[in-house]
Amino acid sequence: MTFCAEHASSGSLAGPAFNAASMPVQSAPGSVVSVRILFLGTDFVWPADGGGRVRTLSQLSVLSSLPDVERIRLFTGGEKAIGEEDRAALLRQLPKLDLADPVFHPVHLFKHPRYVPHVAWLRLAHGVPYIAGKWDSASFRTALERELSRDAYDVVWLNGLGIAHYLSLVRRLQPKARVILDQHNVESDRFAQFARRQRGAKKLLADAEWRATRRFERGVLRAVDAVAAISDDDARAYHELAGVEALTVPQVVSFVRREAPSTNEQHFIWIGNLSWAPNARGLSWFCGEVWPRVRERLPDARLEIAGTGLSTDAGGAARAPLAWRAPGITTLGFVADLSPLYERSIAMVAPILGGAGVRMKLLEAFRHGVPVVTTPDGAAGLPITPGHEAFVEADAAAFGARTIELATSSEARARLREAGYSFLEEHNQHPAAQRVVWALLGGGARRQAARADVPSTIAAS
Image (cartoon, rainbow, N blue to C red; front, top):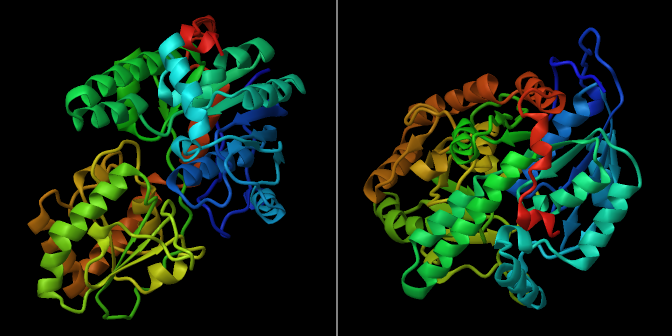
């Protein structure tokens, strides 16, 4: 199989704006067609209602838009049955996609406690870290083995570190395939952050888990043929950790410039995964430390919190943590159509504390023309200039002052709005993503000899 290294065209975030079949792309001279890809993930991608799914859909969209990619077979796990409407919607977005039946497996492990003892046994008996062991089950392995045996593929795309638990199985059943690891975060960094917040015995356990994750992540990075990173910061981290040259695939964000909303209402939004710890901590900090300052100056200010991850009461209403129940704040929980929220808001607050990777909520806000005030952790991974594309503040008083500024200054809102659009034009369009993805498929980023170096915690899978 021979690959060329250049192409131009498409991919996108979730939404009706993108259709891979509509993007005109020309193959480079001398290229060979018919690249077949097996895309392995731990969660079904549709609806793209969270940052991880949005990123996955973008990668699938870019792959689908490449003319030399003939077919993409998608194999995933998932907690919920996938309805025909969701399947059909995804296939309309990605005409080259072929769907395997998703295999039940808990994405949120501790909501399914019967799986916990097995993961603990893997950790104690075999040294398999949580990030990998949580995806281990006989049913998942059997289904994946069947999938790997049904056809020959040119590329196997591992969508995240967790699915790399099955790397030895991939190598055994698809020995000629090029294996690409697509990292959404530096996972060992996330565990290091968690360990730093612990005390006593919990800290000892958390430190041990961080070290196990770090060993596993380093081994996987060295064992695959190419590594995709979500940001240049993450790519540098992979080089420091494992000596690999990861390639940064920009998140593709399609948008149409819209007129600024005419509303003068002091209405703010927060959108994201409400069960993710960096989001939840940031919201609790904002509601407790920042929002009272905003309401003191702007007594009519309102904040709507939307996202997945909260439990609901008998009537279907989201159960908000006590810290978020303050005057002017409404917790909506899951919202199927976010467009009206963006349209009636003058700004997004994104107080994120911890985490890694890139915050998709910032790119989505830019796409909708909504100015953003965030924390340094919220801006991490994006090459933005604080005060230009977004306000970036760590101190509660400064964060509150910037929030008030966006509510009271149409000039500030217009400036950030235009800078956000310009940022997307420069950093998050189709051609750049296509070139990087094609380089990942084509080789040169990793030594082929690394294939034989499969970490022991993977080899037991």
